[in-house]
Amino acid sequence: MTRPAKPGRFRSATIYEGTLRASTRSFLHALGQDDEDIARPHIGVFHTGGEMSPCNLNLREQAQHAKTGIYAAGGTPHECPVVSVSDGLTMAHSGMRFSLISRELIADSVEASVRGHQWDGIFGLGACDKNLPGLMMGMVRCNVPSVFVHGGSALPGQRPGPDGADLNVVDTYETIGKVLAGDATLDELDAVTRACLPSAGACAGQFTANTMGMVSEALGLAPIGSSMVPAVFSERAPLLRKAGKTLMAAVMGDAPLPRDIVTRQALENACAVVSATGGSTNAALHIPAIAHEAGIPFHLDDVAAVFARTPLIADLKPGGKYLARDVYYVGGAGVILRELLRKGYLQGDALTYTGRTLAEELTGAPAPDGRVVRAVEEALSRDGGLAVLKGNLCPDGALLKTAGLKTLVHRGPARVFESEEAAQSAVQAMDYQPGDVLVIRNEGPKGGPGMREMLGITALLYGQGMGDQVALLTDGRFSGATRGLCIGYAGPEAADGGPIAALRNGDVIAIDARPEARRISVELTDAELRQRLAQRATPPAARLGGLLEKYALTVRPSHQGAVTHSGAVTWLRDAS
Image 1: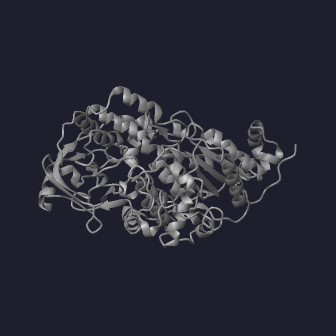
Image 2: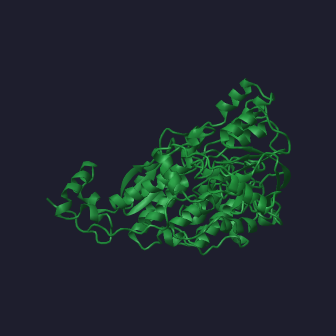
Image 3: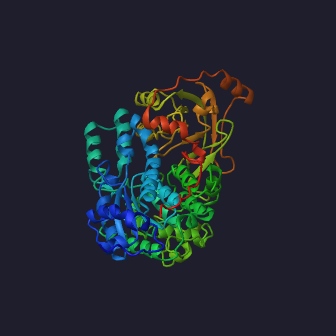
């Protein structure tokens, strides 16, 4: 029998080289590999494909193109599907507790497969909200040559009737509110339900998936122009093959590793593209988590500093007018990144997975079209589309999407709910008043556990015509598709004894999200807050079992990214 020659520097030689690894070679031969295939670098192709949501539906098909590119460039690809939990199918019920947890499961799965099988590189392909950060976290944790590609957005639907306006899934949520308010019929709701999502792909607006797709480009982990190509467009096939070939050049050559790429510069670039596009508030949870994998302390305050100095230049839903497809047609995320670079809002010397700088990769990107993406001089807002608020109610900070808001100031009485279900029941019954601040607590990372997002409630309020007349505050999350005066990630959370736990019905809450203020406070003295917290009864521990129990015991606060381990992972010594 001829044994493969030792490839030298390839880590994967550990699993098949030498007499003791003959049985491993049997497994590789059973996979359809010959001696030449076995001697090549072995690449894990990680995707979250499956039938749990439209976001994931065609990812396995896309992964085949990536595998083709890898093999053509001298690698042996191994398809490695990983778990995914759909935000769409978990919305507004207890299953949403597993959404954020799935980010950790994905990162852990990448680590287990790469370190267990000694893969030489990682190709990551994901499309639903937690898939993108989870895969990127796994790449940075493993620190082998890697490339990420967002699986792309769905095409928008078309509203039934003569106007033929674009539809996306948020229109269904808001139409539910209109039905409850008596402003739409069940037949109209059914028509929107059937029309809003006509293809595979992530939700079409600048919600969490598309925000994190742009983040992957800004971080330097993804090809420029890749994130905004719709999921069903044929252009994705050569894009994925080329990305696979470029990954192999990194594996074979001396390109930077993920921890060389994900630096403080790159993280600030990622925050800048979120702010410039009015992106998802969830990015302020995911970017610190990616930083954590690189061993970089980068928390909500760091995110806030970039948000405050970066203008809003893309007019994207939910706060604006346009969708991911429209960004694709004007040139992709590179248009936004190049415009930010032109005016000094990006650090162009940050490295990318190709070994070139971000500035070099952006050469040739088109100029803004002036409609979907504006020049910085004509920005929609000078200070970006998101804001971090602090005060005696949220000393660790809370997050608000300001893009598209009609007012940044609100003062009103608290209406306190102990869970999402309690708040949802009240909103469905329209049992609240204009001016109220609806407070939903016990939904943080530890207290939920799982930090549920609550698009269902916020969309109902807009459908009822009340989205601009009330405010919401929670230690849980709001969806990237949420709009309105909805403040999430309140920290410390109630389960950690944060001030939100001391609130009572009728307490007056003052919100001032203007750039010169960025405040959220309750009109109580510090002594009153301390006294209430000291008198607060500790709720009985829930019998969670399984995954939720493990998560509640290990998760860290949201302003630190809700991570579940202590810091950057280092490789164990190879078995060879």
